Image 1 (tube, rainbow, N blue to C red):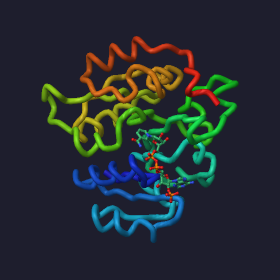
Image 2: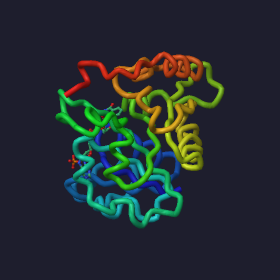
Image 3: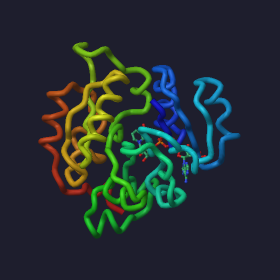
Length: 220
Ligand SMILES: NC(=O)c1ccc[n+]([C@@H]2O[C@H](COP(=O)([O-])OP(=O)(O)OC[C@H]3O[C@@H](n4cnc5c(N)ncnc54)[C@H](OP(=O)(O)O)[C@@H]3O)[C@@H](O)[C@H]2O)c1
């Protein structure tokens, strides 16, 4: 499958490693340009591209840049993607450590992914946001393994969500349907499921136990 990855850091780099190992055709971009991605390209066989080209022809695009950088992405960054493209958003809002205060999230009460959708101009599927980057490399397990981790996946487009859940299964993780993007506060930072390394039942239980109140440490 043709997959575009926007952001080549902790998460984008490790997704590039695993997805190329599975035989996918991966294009990867960062903010500084493809010439800074030659090492990752040599290691993985992925194609480094300018960010404007990352989505070209892709059936799945992963947006994995710091939240505060989402508005810097070029307008039309998803133009040229395959019809019905599923856009994965891995983002988290860290107002005090990294992102600064974002009014749409804090004052308008948008979920982090709803805010990101507004900037991208395209619906997203929220996935991997609570997954340690290293776990993408270290913790894949075959289906049915007793210690297989599950990841929550939220999104409004059911077809895109199904495509993303199938890809995550291929990557070696179970998934739990965490509802739509308006429900995705249940998997934001500091919720019970965030960073949880458990299977389907543990993840479903943690999602159910989440509180909608944004904790003080995650307010700007
Ligand atoms: N680290 C984790 O374990 C983890 C786990 C789950 C979720 N997350 C979330 O996932 C997101 C990415 O995290 P990360 O740790 O992978 O970030 P990171 O290591 O800081 O990497 C960020 C990447 O985004 C690129 N980038 C920034 N602005 C860009 C732009 N305007 N256009 C294109 N590329 C741009 C950077 O490129 P340059 O270096 O060229 O600027 C870099 O490759 C964050 O929201 C984070 O909270 C992280």
